[in-house]
Image (cartoon, rainbow, N blue to C red; front, side, top):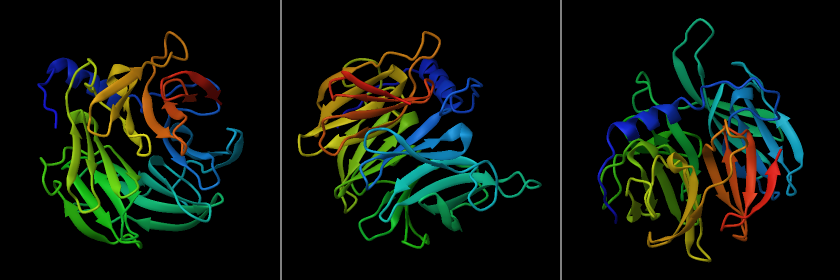
Length: 313
């Protein structure tokens, strides 16, 4: 376990800027606008949440676009704000959608929408511990029993749902670690669940029974330190994890005991578009990283050491 001090006003200011990064609109004609989520598909491709276009883009194994679906609205097949994405079997995509209750009622409502090959097959209003309290959610991620985990971003709760989205558990802390801060990202790998608490500058690894296996929480800009991390993924076979260290405009790799290995800073799309890493994936064979740069409206494919292989779209 690592502990560190805080950077005070500078860190809080950067947090505000990052929080509003997705809300700033870019009118330039690009294929994606403010993409914010990545998921691997069973066919070996990628699903991308195109946040400002209210759409899902599906890429094939070579990066060629295969499908785009969704549009702004409150009805079937429509999306409002995509805050979660999970690929399942049978070409199923689960979307965590934050929308208005109606055009007349501006209160937010969280729902789960399921799509099969771009067609909506189910929509469920997501039960929450305090449905009237403003909150942000992250996930979903698969739970070992066939249900799902969702991270709650106000009180700092790990929520567990059944396979039909009934809320059955609210965890305020792991079995043997400090309480959760606001949870901003989840990633399931094998039996372990990885959590990101962006505004506490933390990354955690939990075992299937809820024990805490790793906590990274050094705040700063030096080797092994994190500033507003946005995403995490790992390569268990080779014993390393990668973190989108968004506040430091870089990717960092650690071994599975939390010791820093290396890192790199991707080049920005242009001088006026500093890299904003919103999500990160490790390829199944661990030979590539997929980095979603929201400000640059692009997906970077690199080696684990940072050599650029491909830029999409």
